[in-house]
Image (cartoon, rainbow, N blue to C red; front, top):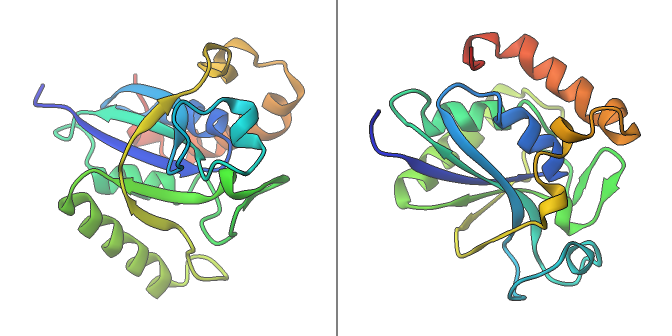
Amino acid sequence: MSREEVATLAGGCFWCMEAVFKEVKGVQRVLSGYTGGKKEHPTYEEVCSDNTGHAEAIDITFFPDVISFREILEIFFTVHDPTTLNKQGHDTGSQYRSAIFYHDEGQKTIAQQVIKEINDAHIWDAPVVTELKPFTKFHSAEEYHRDYFELHPQQSYCQAIIAPKVARFRQKWADKLKV
């Protein structure tokens, strides 16, 4: 395997995003947490207060010779609604915003291209509102948030929200699934 790269994405509830990206071929690690805000070491409760500026996000470590950053973004833009500002489904607040926290100019350029292509193709009924910001710092979520879908598949939120999202991902991206 070649060197690893990192992508940091926010697309609503981090439980949903983590559950999807853990199944992607070429992804070594997915960590739920918080980024994009001002408070050092924010807690879940503080982030949920919508006062820290942080988004629920995932930090994805991947092998670019197996899956490219562009492919990660293509998946990202199909597993959440990038046209709703500070909202994903019933989850509302700036912590649920859609955002790409790029790690270098190459990631920024690719993200700009993908967003333009999505808007030009009118894939969504509204324009993409996904923030594009430089990565600063990622704060890992509390232990009880990690592997949430895997550990609590019968929990009502998992059944109603995450399971259907993962099922749609598996169907659309079958060629990108880990074996």
